[in-house]
Length: 232
Image 1 (tube, rainbow, N blue to C red):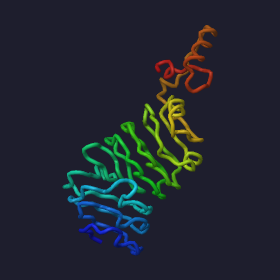
Image 2: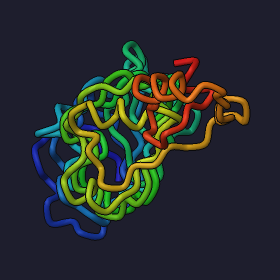
Image 3: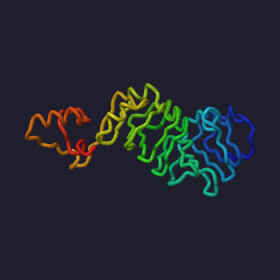
């Protein structure tokens, strides 16, 4: 189906639609909750996909592919990422069940992946400095979040169910930093291994010196000091 005009919800009963090409300037709430839609193509004329609360993508829980015309001057889907990215700000505004977040993205918009029930694994690149409200709300199949963010920040992106069932994997010696930030309070949080050098345990000849170092710098609470902890 090719859309070239902007009526609100003209296809609410078209439950067999699977593919859309949008050529209108505005992509409003025409197809909300049509779970049959798997592919959306945004033409070069699209300059507005609306906000999270009234986005044209709301309720498209089966979405597998998002593409943006290479001639679009506002949005892009760089690196075949299957997402809508605001080019000027490097903000990922809308993802789908197969999105790979590019390392050039610095922010994820409000509700960007909300309701995408097919996502099982998520990779957050180190480049991310902001994640919007409810960005991953309702991603009920999500099992693993691999975050490469070295300096976490407060978020309100995941629902309580995800935080109780999914595993959050974070960089070496950052779990405490994640725990200190709002919104990262996953029950299962694990650190990835650091380099062999950083994981090496420092041997102390003076037990008092070790006690002082452990009390001040034992980030992972194992009663030892590794090279990585000493560096930090």
